[in-house]
Image (cartoon, rainbow, N blue to C red; front, top):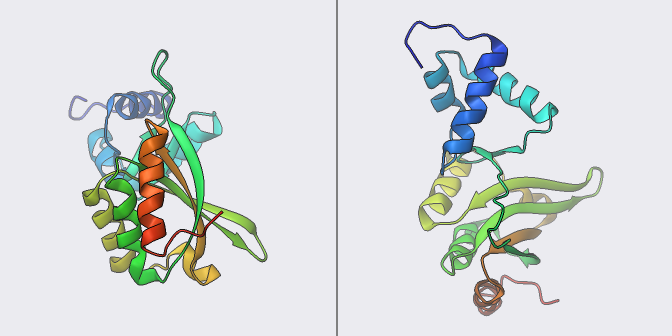
Length: 180
């Protein structure tokens, strides 16, 4: 973007979409704000408007991601697993999963009042796991699983079933996976 050039809201949202679509990594609200020469709050509002128009944008702990379906690309395999552990074992749990080339898409708990609560995690590497755990710690936020005494679900995703099976075996050995 040319410095000093002011875009209209519609033009800015189109530019945000372009940046998100071309990025292979999540983009933070602060990064997008800097690129667009606006405040982070403006970006949050723009993202909300784009989501309202059914743009497949999700907010993760690493930033915003545009979910693209690539024609001709093999669709990833997904599995929903149930886990139970103390908060101190979260990093171990996530690392056991990503070490097998598996992505942890989200975490879900069953809340007694609100029903199912799901939050996007989207971690695929040890670095992303570390960043996620540090963000939870630095903000004094609680893990969703703390609301259910450690019981929670994860949606796992990989390019083949064997990777998910290996991750589940490792979780079972660590006493984290709840047997089906």
